[in-house]
Amino acid sequence: MYIVVKKSKKKRYSIATLGSHCSLQILKGAKDEGFNTLLICEKRRLGLYKRFNFIDDMILVDKFNEISDESCQQHLRKTNSIIIPHGTMIAYMSREEIEKITIPFFGNKWIIKWEADRKLKQQLMNEALLTTPRYVESKDDIERLCIVKLHGAAGGRGYFLAWNRQSFEEAAKKLMDQGVITSEDDLYIQEYVNGVPTYLQFFYSSVTNVLEFMGVDRRYESDVDGMGRIPAKQQLGIEMQPSYNVIGNIPLVLRESLLEEVYAMGERFVKTARRLVPPGMTGPFCIEGIYDREGKFTTFEFSARIVAGTNLYLDGSPYSGLIFDKPMSMGRRIAHEIKMASKQGRINDILT
Ligand code: ADP
Image (tube, rainbow, N blue to C red; front, side, top):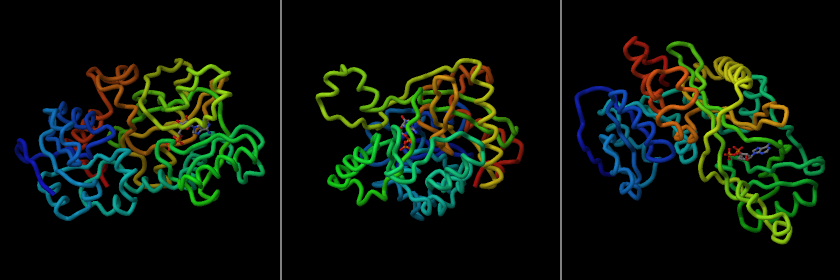
């Protein structure tokens, strides 16, 4: 492991994160709020990240899980770092590795288990009274269009649609032949909800105890979002199973009449997380689901940390603009929270 120190400043907090997902937004926001910034960067990605002047220090690693190595943690301690988690950290590090990190961690590291485990995730959504898609216990119970997911899949890869037992078995067999799954038990069947997939981005401040709705996006997924470009006749002629791999995000604003329920869902989520996973949901999170034709929201997922869709709003969103008088990205909002908590001597309220 090599350490590249570009221009360390006097002793103050460094905002640190892994170089991927939304690290640019996080570190730009931290710099705008006056923090030192530190990137844990895979050597192969140095070419990209050295382009950005707002990154003060870098720790170069071969693999992200080196962050739990003592030498890496020592450097993070020396630079007075606070780690900001994001989707790549969740995807590339085990829950145990994350829980072992001794560096101050922004938000609640204990909630990651609830995000990673389907059963716990469902429990939290149920107790928060979020409507979720019907779970289909067995392939024999498939009566309508269903989406079949892989346990612990990241980014919708390998998901498929099934409408009866036969279509389920055919697609499952393909995944087994490709070595993606070992048996049908690796799959999880859920009723397909038709409508607009929507990602609601929130920030809960443990300093002010206020929930902020910061933005909303939808994902652009390959190939499911590209299939509409192929006429129906050709679609029938080719055997095509849509994949849900996220390629990017598209901004969205909601009908204003939907906002009240958005806040209500966010507040129920925060309240439930506080009860089930102390100290609760500090900082960014996302409720992910589908609006149907009646404007009713069905939640299929949540992320208990910043999501990549917030990268859209580096200069603020149509919602953050209603709360703040300066451009406020989610990354900057995190830094702002750390600054507020630190000024009030409450830094431990927002770290685990
Ligand atoms: P991952 O957690 O792997 O990113 P998600 O559960 O977020 O996967 O789902 C990936 C995509 O699959 C979503 O963006 C959405 O388009 C689609 N999807 C997931 N669940 C449903 C559902 N019940 N009905 C319809 N589409 C769904």
